[in-house]
Length: 485
Image 1 (cartoon, helix red, strand yellow):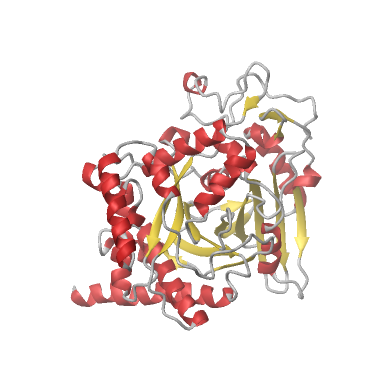
Image 2: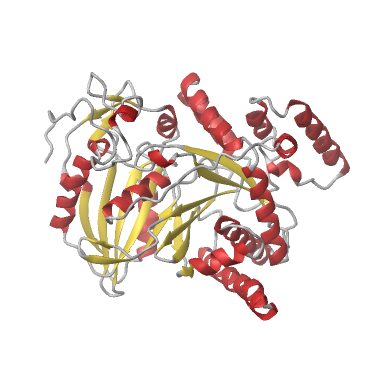
């Protein structure tokens, strides 16, 4: 056990000691990863934002479930935790009142435990309950536990880290490190900004969806003209989001945040099939996943409300802005995109094309780096409450959040048990009622979601529609291509 007086050395980095991609001279230039002369580290502005956003309804905890072939012992889990805090000193620190990472006492009993569920208990309901629970700020802000359900033969490791420590990519980096794999290379592609596309969209392709109605069309054209004139002025991008039209009223938008959650995850989907669906139109895995989500929401809203949705719904997509040499870092290096999902489009081929088109437009815009800069500036200049209200106002423009994280492409094991799959759950900021996460591992993809039970009244139906949409897209697009060939 690490004692309270055990302080990291003066130049201990918050990355593994074996990380040869981080030479000492580069680490010395980074104030957010090096322990300074006071043996504490000042918390970064992006990390502080997650502290501001935390309350009873928003625990802001990133959760990941590692599905195991067999259970693992509690003692081996505690021993691995002791090794982990030596490799990542940030996992043995808490945040002081002046926003510095400060080493504190680590108790393995508080961070590692084993839970055996009875036949009456439901695994998904237990995880949904954990999604609503926060983490104590007076101790290191992470924990994990081994869940076993003997009657169903299911075993998994549930890892929980507060968003202050890192985002979803950071958690997956930690998972890869635990599994003995090299972290995936998350590099943000710095596209050359095409003047026409970037100016017209002003970092926001949602404006390309013209809204029905004459007066709204006129307002849209007026905004479009203003964006052409002021497109390259940096403040215009966050301002364009501030004055963005909200989504039409739907069940996913909450009037007030609730503390309850429901969660579920899909069967394994072939990564190759998902990629080939996107490649059929020169798209990516993200384009395919967005089309699957849009199709599932189209059918879900139609079945639950009895009306066919005819409008697009905006989705927040976090984007990692890490460089190749930052892939070991546990921190928040993320921007955000607003992308309109074509919920009202019935044709699957058309939905896929629209998703690719809107994602491509976003890649040509400076929205991601500007969003990251905006997060840093607002957190640094504004107080807790103002910053929180501003971020909630931005999230209110959308109806859901979608995150895609990439795990190990090959099979792995943890403490002697074969890993069968990995599933993550994204926190729901503001009044968003649905968060969908796509996680890849060993050639397969899992699609999972966490939602407010008031927003998603039938999670089983939505899960079934996600799986059906993948099967239908595979038949309509891939089988059609095979027949054509």
